[in-house]
Each structure stands twice: as structure tokens, then as C-alpha cells.
Length: 230
Ligand SMILES: [Zn+2]
Image (cartoon, rainbow, N blue to C red):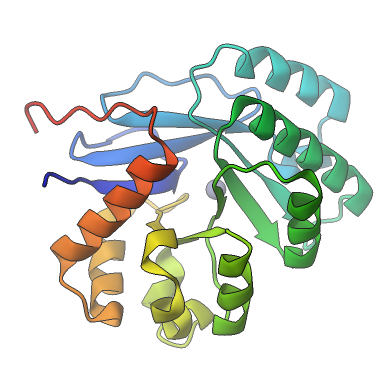
């Protein structure tokens, strides 16, 4: 069966290849760039935006843009306790976006820094019933066990290149049907992340590609992939 590499979270909108399915995350206010096929877009209020912009203004723009129905996911959104932004405000704006994701039945790309308990609490309360994908996940096997039981997905990025990182050690404990990879802001080829992961998982590259592609199709059944002229 035909499969493609998937970059589930990237901010790099240029030099994208047709052979990679890209989910490009736009922050609220960012215009939709010109793009090639197999590029899809996610839209969200990033918690960092609350540092410099007013909540009501952000929500007004977000609401207007999200009504266009060109997005296949909400995010990145979440809570970042490494930043000096009130937790109450971050939680409010995060939960607002989870409600929208629930309403529109769109998956969510999550930005979580030192706030996993808060994220789990909000999600358990709202029960959006959509795939919740933890971007740049770098946690332990205990966290993976708990979060996968709660239905979360895991997107792994360049942290696996460091053999001492938590995720390099715990990668094999992520259920294969919950796994994604990403480049985020790195100008790195997503294939390199897959190569490293395949090595750590002791799994053929092609099998890993097929597995993650199946995950994408299951989470994003409405994203139409174009296999022509690859
Ligand atoms: Zn990002």
C-alpha cells in the first residue's frame, strides 16, 4: 500500500516537498501561505501570543479565520508554564479552543511546557473526543503510559537525536498507533527524524512510514492526499 512521510507539526512553509504530507501550524493572524499539494493547515492561538496581544482581539481573529473551514486541525494551543503569562488566562484561551475543536470535530496540536497535569485536566473536563496530539513530546515511559491511556497522541521531533533525552529512552513504549513525527521550526528533513526513530525502534524505515501514515489517515480522514506525480 502506498504511503508518504508525514510531518505533523511544522512552521516552515517554504521548500516543501510533495512527497511529504505537511501539517503547517499557523498562529492567529498569520496568513495562509501559497502552498503545494499535500500541505494542510492548522490554526491556533499559541500561548506565547498572550504575552504581547490581547485575548479578545486574538479570539476575534481566530473565530473569523476558523469559520473558513480550510483548516484540518486546531493549534498549536496549550499551556506553557515556562513563560510569564497568567495560568488562568492561558487555561481560558486553551479551553476555548478545545471547545471549538469539539464543535468542529478537528484534531488538536498541543503545546505543553511543564503543564501536562493542567492539559489533562482541561481535556478530561471538556471531552472533545478528537485526537489530541502532544507536539515535541519529550517525556518518560510513565508519562507515556498515563497519557496513552487517556487517548493522547505523541509527536516526536529532534529531541530523539540526543541519546540521553527522555524520549530517546522511552520512544519504544509509545503505542505505534499513537505515534507522529515533526520538524517544528527546524529546517531539517523529516526523513532524518524517521531514520533516527526507526533505528531506536529497531524497525524498518518503510514499516514506520506506513504505520505513521495510517495514523494520519485515521486522525485526518478528511485530508485528501494526492499521490499523483510523486
Ligand atoms: Zn511549533
